[in-house]
Length: 314
Image (cartoon, rainbow, N blue to C red):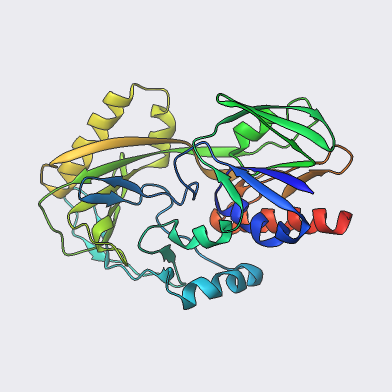
């Protein structure tokens, strides 16, 4: 059986782990690497974790899934020195009450072994699907791929909706937009993560101090949700300038450099009615973080459910 999987994030990695015995898996990813929102942007002598800064695990199956990676230390707990910042307000320390995990040396590094042994086509943006059950073709800007017996999408929900628009894909979810600013600076605060009481800036994270990182003085600025929603259609240059000015004011310093990244679908606010989607007669399926509101954990649960449904079908 030939199975095409669109997307190469945590959902896709979970599908690879659970479906490898069914046949040949081919993964198509539109970006340059794997990881989805577990993303690390590389620069010259710098790196920023500009997607999900960390994730938690409450589901017992997800906890079990993570154990091998915690054991080989490609995944580890993050114990940042945390504080709260606000203009004209005295900082105070914060703490977490459950483990928060990060990949090391990059957020997506721990996922890469799960794709081993499978064909992964990166920088391949799948734009449409055509054919029939058991003989599906995927069209990208570079050509046609296939045929495939099954097509499974773990891509962002908007992309999955577009790909499966002609196949009765009826799931919807509401996402929160987000902006991150990737900065370099000479200022070195005493904290590692700061939650901000500010209308524009939500939190500041010193990327270079995270486990396994070796790029000091790199900072990630996350925008407040409400402000990001209001600015999602604004000119990127204006958003970058406003976010940069707000962060520099909070820190009372000037950044050496700053670059904006926009996430149209940063996190799920209202999940879909089902954790996954499967059409056995069409031999199509979909999964993603849209099945819940817990980010990485929801992505895993969705893919696990889709894989189980597909295996049980046969």
